[in-house]
Structure formats: structure tokens, C-alpha cells
Length: 254
Ligand SMILES: Nc1ncnc2c1ncn2[C@@H]1O[C@H](COP(=O)(O)OP(=O)(O)OP(=O)(O)O)[C@@H](O)[C@H]1O
Image 1 (cartoon, rainbow, N blue to C red):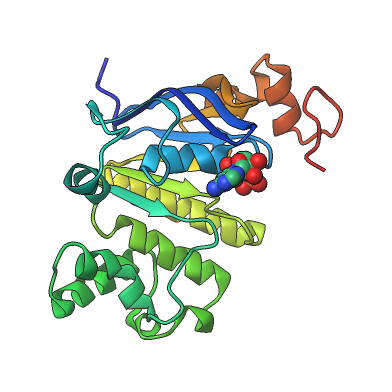
Image 2 (cartoon, rainbow, N blue to C red):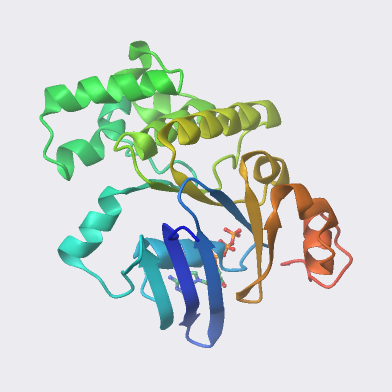
């Protein structure tokens, strides 16, 4: 089997008595697209943060391209981050920077690329997500939510990463704009040949962008399979979730 680009092995994370992750095992092959589904508060973001190194697991391991990065800091972690892109929930753009400065942020501040060259690359990347140079000089507050997501997508792909994390990429968008974002994600991820790990509540998005779907429930991955099998998984938890039923083994989070 090909070496996974990302692998979580028995990852455990608690906050006080709240045992959020209770042994998460998951791996993603290069170029593959995995979508992790799960209810509100099930620990999807915590899982992502542990994978990215923004949180350290209490137990278990995180491997990036075969290297154990669980405890890595400094240069080793930076080397991993250089190969990873991230689209945060709500876009997380810097309000005080223009669109192109947001897109080029990593190039200027981490990679030491000259401002002029970084701008050129930012403009080329914005073009890939169908945003013209007229938008590049605007501030995030001056563009729509759908455009902000496109800017975030451009920012996540500018370094041509091998692995991209998408945290709720379609949240807050109408279904048509969400679908256009999904199309852009698929197009750009394919052209990079990157692997992706996405977390979402949006089943339309999951169905569209995933090769495989995994479900997180009570701190563990309880099902994993092809996206095309998600409607007949034979798992009552998955079934309840994908059909959005309040009745079933999963209790609504209210
Ligand atoms: N830094 C933190 N300190 C304490 N508790 C935290 C922290 N981060 C997350 N949690 C807790 O971990 C649990 C899982 O949260 P998480 O945000 O991962 O859920 P989620 O599945 O991403 O939810 P949603 O789909 O609603 O975004 C919650 O109970 C949350 O309160």
C-alpha cells in the first residue's frame, strides 16, 4: 500500500473531564479526498487541530508522510506546514489586509518571497478561483461571503501543498454558491494532485468532494467507506446523520 500522506493512530484528546477524542484512527493516501462527518461538538475541529499540530494529543500519534510529527515543533513542524494548506471555517481572512495580501501572506511572512513576486503569484492564484485583479486590492469586508471563500481557497493552494484541510468550506453559503465552491475545490485539488481532509455538516458537499467518507462519533471513527456507499452504509448512526433525522441512536446536540 502507498504510504499515507497523513495518519492518525489512536489519537486521544480531553479537556478536563470532556473526553473529545477517544482513539481516532484514520489515514489518507496521497491525492485522496477524505471527508469527516459528525454532529456538532463531536470533535471534528479538535481532530483537525491535532492533525495540524495546533493541538498536541494526550495519547496516540500523528504521522505526516511517514514521519511521526506528534510532538514536533520548530523547524520539523514548519517543514510539514510548508506542505500543508488550510481553509478555515468562516474564511478567517485578515480584515486589515487586502485580498491579495491575504492570499500571499504565507509567501511574504514565512517563505521570504519578495512582495512584488508574491503579488504576482497571488494574482495568478486568484485567477484560478475566478477572481480578477479588480478584486485583489479590496478588503475582505468589501466582498461577498462566496468571494471570501474563494479568496480563502486561493490562500490555501498558493504554496501548492500536498495536503489541504478544509474546515466547513461551504458554511454560510447558499446552495448554488456552495456548489460552485465545491466545483472549484475539486478542480484545484485535482490539478495540484493534493490529498484533502475536509470536515463538514453539509452532506451535499461531502457527497461531491469526497472519495471516502468517515464518521466521527463519541470520539472514534465508527464508519469509513466510499462516498458512493454513504447512503447504504449499513450503519444506523451514519444512516441517521446523512438523512438528517432527529430520531435514532444519535441525540441532537441541544
Ligand atoms: N480549546 C478547547 N478547550 C476546551 N474544550 C474544547 C476546546 N476545543 C474544543 N473543545 C470542546 O471539544 C468538543 C468538540 O468540539 P469541536 O469544535 O471539535 O466539535 P465539532 O465537531 O467541530 O463541532 P461543530 O461541527 O459544531 O463545529 C466540544 O465539547 C468543545 O467544547
